[in-house]
Amino acid sequence: MRLVQDAEVWTDQLKFLKNKDPRVRRAAATNLGRLGADAKFAIAPLRQRLTDADPRVRCGAATALGEIGPAAVDEMIQALTLPDKLVRREAVWGLAKIGKAAAPAIPALARRLADRDASVRKGAARALGLLGHLARPAIPFLIRALGDTDLLFCRMAAWALGQIGPAAVDALIAALNHHDKYVRRESAWALGQIGPEAAAAVPKLIAILKADLEESSGLEESSEPRLPKIQAHQDTEVVYFHPISDTTLRANAAQALGQMGGKAMSAIPVLTAALADPSDKVAQAAAVAIDQLTEETCTGWHLKAAG
Image (cartoon, rainbow, N blue to C red; front, top):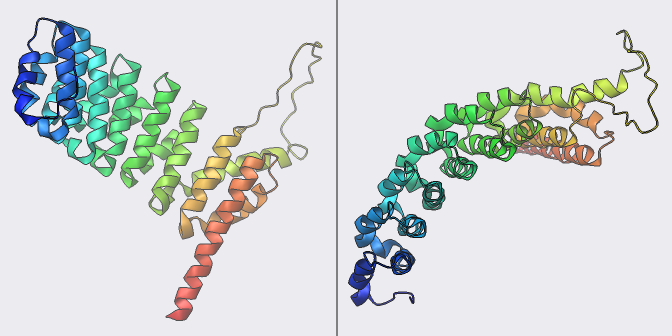
């Protein structure tokens, strides 16, 4: 069925939604969705197709409602509760596309963070993140999501917390101690995105960089008893672990400090020491952070002098 462009045949599309052939019903839903906001008249008939006997028709109806936009938010909230995971997937992605107008869906999206389907959980986290500070009521749900066994979902949840902004700072600081390295990395990055309003995280971010520096420079002077050497077989790989061995986390911490501006000036000594980090990634992030911090300081002095 070809794309409908003539308003005079819209009524026919509504009739096609009730056709006995599921292929016709699905095509009608697709055509109506392509009309976008102009298809508001089709919201109720499309809502009925969300429980169609054919799974492809159900998905087509959910997709069409997402294309219609804000006027169909209530219908997409309803779709989030349906047993078909594919319909729920379409609903979360449709709400994400709508943006700020999808704010009434925040409670429903927060509940979908615990959905049985991984794609629905990720889509819900993304939709909440795109809502920014409006998604503040979802913070407790996103905090719990950081402990999920799906690493990509954890990272999406941390990203969403960063997009929500200052209200999520405490949760992100706590997440820097998470057992999952990906959660720690994303939390450090998210704090940087929040910027100066996340200044409460500066001591912890400094500690992430400092712990590694102290570990690598203080091994010989340490008064702690040393572990006995183990004679390894030839095919045994010996790996050295230290508290902050994750170079991506350290680089993200350095980057975040640079993005916090004047409130992170106390980090300059540690960032300077990090210029000698064995990881080029960390050293480069530290260099950029120092430039950002010193540039802001210089600008501040120029402004005071001009005043």
